[in-house]
Length: 222
Ligand SMILES: NC(=O)c1ccc[n+]([C@@H]2O[C@H](COP(=O)([O-])OP(=O)(O)OC[C@H]3O[C@@H](n4cnc5c(N)ncnc54)[C@H](OP(=O)(O)O)[C@@H]3O)[C@@H](O)[C@H]2O)c1
Image (cartoon, rainbow, N blue to C red; front, side, top):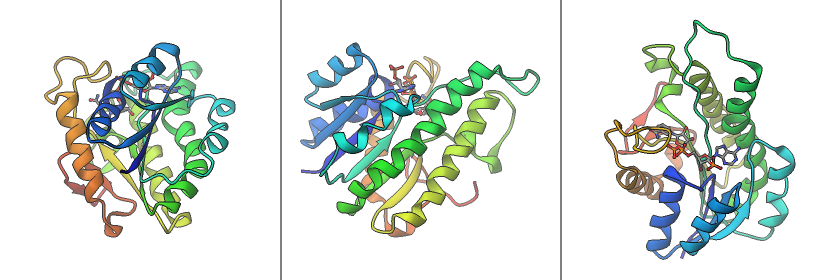
């Protein structure tokens, strides 16, 4: 039985990952920031922790709450969207909301959980987005979100040098039917999560620092 940690699991892709890993018989530790989210996770048989990734004082409790754990798979799923383009400056409030959840939270989590992932020789994966690929940009829509995911990609790719006993990767879940992805998205959340689980089971030492799509494609230029 593996131990899986899912950060930002109250709904959408994170909740579905918890559901599928539990169904597969894995031990899951999952985080949410409100009572309703924690209750949905408890029903699935996950061990729950209350974490607001945008609040460093909340995230800083992770290290002692997970003290002594060996984590085979750690997933950073929490994320916030902003849809504005480059013709309008982002407000300070929007900038902080997106950058804190998508970037600062991951940079708070990585140093705390990586020793536990290394202890298991495991994998850390951040759910990012193809919208953060500089090599593949087609428009400025979701400008701030794109910037945040490009920054997240660098946070993960550069951190790998400090944790040689583990592998760190960035994942693109596809365009998925969630609150964020909307009803027009082609992928169901179940199919995306199944793909991500298959990818996570296949991550090799050669993949360290790579950007991997839910269908297993690896992006070398990003
Ligand atoms: N859906 C897509 O098409 C798509 C495509 C590419 C990438 N992604 C990425 O996939 C990830 C999951 O997205 P989704 O589609 O499942 O979105 P979602 O349904 O909107 O869920 C977002 C999740 O992030 C959590 N979150 C946001 N801010 C948080 C904070 N400060 N602290 C703790 N948790 C926080 C939310 O918790 P609350 O319930 O507490 O708000 C929720 O669990 C995101 O990183 C997103 O950028 C999604």
